[in-house]
Image (cartoon, rainbow, N blue to C red; front, top):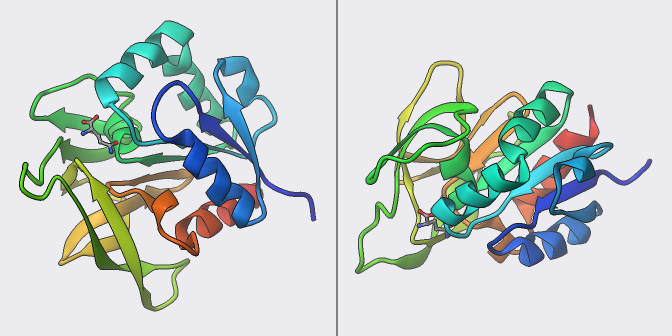
Length: 195
Ligand code: GLN
């Protein structure tokens, strides 16, 4: 079977680590700096970083239209941390514009200073199967404070949603590229290839 071709939005943030994770689970990782590069890809990962900077670059390079069009055309997209903030319908603290592609509300930097960054064991429902334990690494992470109708919660930490999905759109508060064996990258790459 052909390898899934997974784009990494390479404007800012930790896209390189996502590239290593995609390769480790058998996908082909392609750095995307211009919307034209989305043609022919199966999926796109929007990495963690600084969402305000990312948003500015997304507008500058024309991704605000191109990313929804990519999903419309059958592509899958996975936003992690700042990437989730960009995909969310509503962003608070402070209020920020976004692509509004998944109906959740997120609160930025919601864990406060003392727990700026931490790792914890959460639970993950992999492809409809029973929940499994998975490490989740949070770095100045947002929190999902509201989940809209029709949104599937596939990752949780202490009863709070940390990874959500609606069809081909995936979004999570933590950094899956920092936790071997890259379970979530495996799920995303497999789902993206099936299109
Ligand atoms: N706090 C960052 C923001 O609001 C996100 C942090 C991250 O992506 N690790 O953009």
